[in-house]
Amino acid sequence: MAGNNRRDFLRKASLGVVGVGAVAVAPEMLFGGAAQAASPPPEAKPTDGPIVLLLRDAGSGEFTVMHGEQSSSFTDKGLAARLTHEAPSA
Image (cartoon, rainbow, N blue to C red; front, side, top):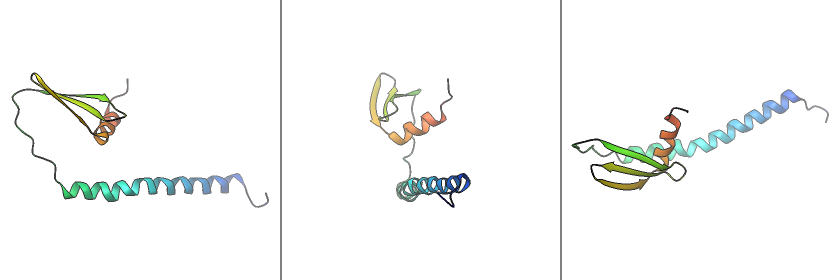
């Protein structure tokens, strides 16, 4: 293995990790940003009380929204990821 040393190996491995990370992030930057720009967020509706959002399953992004005596469910993996990222650790 003449000509190879630990420093060169680490340098090449680091560049490979950066390259893989850039490829993984690029589609989100390209398509995620374009999708958001194409459709603005909806206007908030006025409510007469608190709204409770329950994240039932972070992996699948399953939520339940409760308002008054009514509830509904929806799935949003992106929102689940953002919430779990911002949640304080126990």
